[in-house]
Image (cartoon, rainbow, N blue to C red; front, side, top):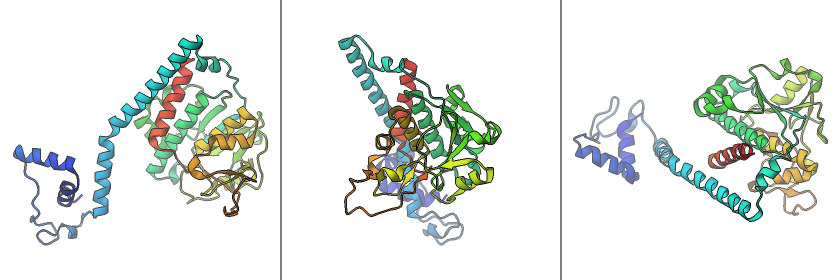
Length: 333
């Protein structure tokens, strides 16, 4: 890292860093001089050094620092939201004499459907995408914990970068309940005739959920770099495959990319509502501009019904808030 360039740029563009450097100067620490010779450049020309950093990179570092500095503030805001919900719930209890959320929890009817998140693509993802997958898995776990008809949730081929990231940032995963986390591949855990891979490339369309089957969601966040890989895997193993009936009910004005947690939540919603259309529109993010088939505007382009699973991700704050809320709801029961 070219500390000279970073220091000069940061000092001029970030008041917080200006204050830091000012305090260091008062304590006798000296800032690097703009006239200092670099290893392979002329005086004052740090951009020619072998480790020179562009303005874009420096801005990214400063932005990252600001994000880290605001971490506690974001955590406090999420805490305030949870406290507000708790007060509302307490007010309901005082008025009705019954906690409605706990009443719902007693009505849980677990489903026999097995839903597998296949984590065997770990070596195909960059670490930043593994972190996204980790957040999506956390969302799935939280949603399943507070669902009316929770599925039998499995993580298979659990290891590598994903396990390392969970060990570092989500150490509580070892205490997760109602989930089967396995290092083995799903083909070594279940009968091949019971497996159905949910993949957007399949020509088959899923219309009903069979409780004797185990449905697989590919745990891959790769921005479509490995298109068709889950369908290819299903063909190689000789297992059944299908895609969700998204194209039969929905038109969207953006890319039809569904995250792992979106597919998972749609399955949970269908188990509850028994209606694919309601399930889709209760889960799909508003930003995707989803419109029911038949109500689509004439101006909306006629696009393919193929959907891709495993990329999009809600914001960190939304995910963290949902994860903690979902876990708390079940713990309250």
